[in-house]
Length: 59
Image (cartoon, one colour):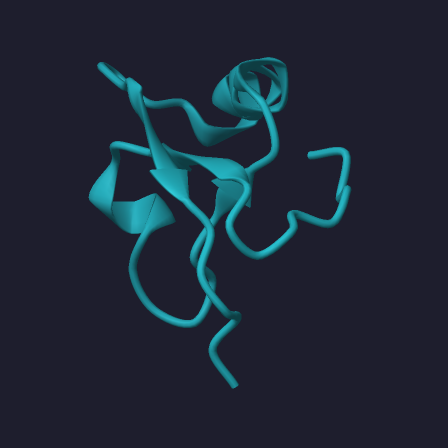
């Protein structure tokens, strides 16, 4: 939500909901606070996040 760059090898947050991780738009967040601010607009029923290590961006 803040659009801060996430460094390769850095921590990123992914939403557990499949629609956030499918298609061309794969949402990742820099922090739990940014993920939390995404929830009111996304209207997920039951969501959580996972922490992962950032890789190189796909082209």
